Image 1 (cartoon, rainbow, N blue to C red):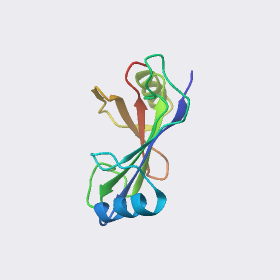
Image 2: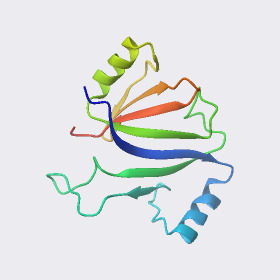
Image 3: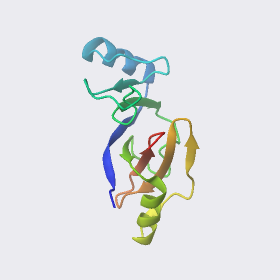
Image 4: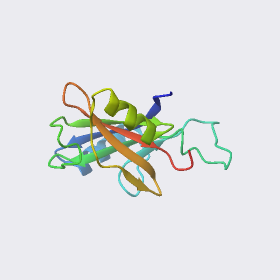
Length: 130
């Protein structure tokens, strides 16, 4: 069974998210979206419908007091793309991993979470249509 097939996003906490977003925009050329993050898409790689949803990588900041990474106390979280979220979560449970019981399904895809042995929350994402 395939496990992780790519990086879907890099998320980290910031004391002043707006100031840090501006720094990344002004100094590293990040093209910030209306929601405040950036989307990196490989050039020349398109899905059948002309989009690159399954190939994009998202960069996003969260306020330092956000509980989105909880129960991890780390200031970052990596989002990994997967082909079959439910099958992978079941496999991880069988292997004794600390898998969050919650799964989110929306127009943005399916999301699940697991904690690594050092207490880092890992987000698993199955893009829509896959």
